[in-house]
Image (cartoon, rainbow, N blue to C red; front, side):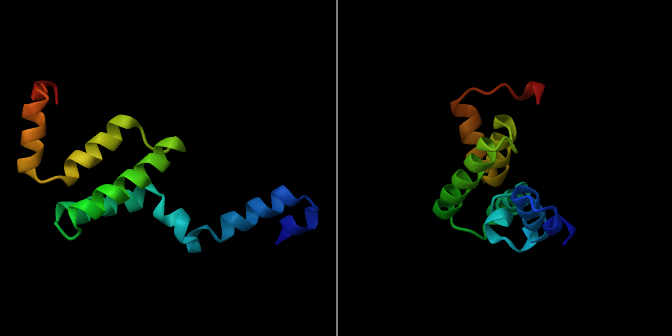
Length: 101
């Protein structure tokens, strides 16, 4: 690793993190791709609703804090994960104007 020869710790650690990023399970878990896969599983009813909500909240909050996901995208992902019947109830209860969607 050529960065090791620079004798600068930050450069070396940055290169090391970049090289092993794909094997870091925490990094993979807190990613947009993982969140989208989780939403797909919820849509297909392959995950329990209570577990989904807890995991979705934890991951999407972390992504939002890191600036990797915006509020509207976060809400859209949540709504697409819900059953259509539940989405209709939410839209009706909050009187959402869907003509602009």
